[in-house]
Amino acid sequence: MDNGRLTRMVGGIGEAITRRQAEVAEIEQELAALEGITCVGREWWRDRDHPTKKAKMYVNHSIDQVCPLHGEPEPGGRLRVYVGSDPDAIVEAREAMAREVHRVALALRLRRVEGALGNCRWTLNRLYSDLGYNVGTDGVVVSRWWW
Ligand SMILES: [Zn+2]
Image 1 (cartoon, rainbow, N blue to C red):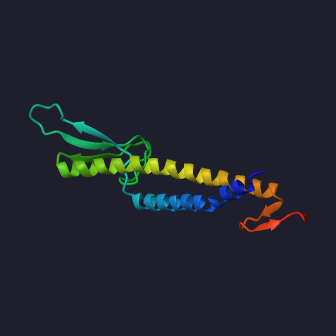
Image 2 (image 1 turned 30 degrees about the horizontal axis):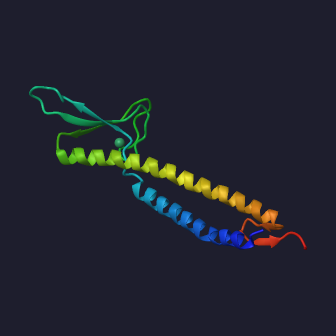
Image 3 (image 1 turned 90 degrees about the horizontal axis):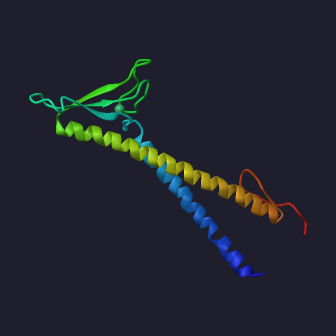
């Protein structure tokens, strides 16, 4: 048996775990920064094809949909936010919707990394068990057998 290979493989685990834990912390920080500034609505226009009236943008939300940025509708109602035709206001509204897309992607990534760390915890418990050790909830490894 190639014992050198086995111990070399084990040597990298601590750093790999630390990196993923740092990634979790980074994602959580980014998610916290996005709290309350994302919009779950969709862009909608009025008078876009009108020959004389100026096109006006609205942000429409689904029925009973709560928006982190725009709040909560009346029960059974929907939020409709007037943005207007000011280019800066339109950019601002679009950026809030883009932040929501980013937030959803981050939340998905967080679940994946946390899931991977959970699998890793299970695998390490199993590994220590195979070697005759128990791992406490505090992570302390205790020998189970007297060899
Ligand atoms: Zn909104």
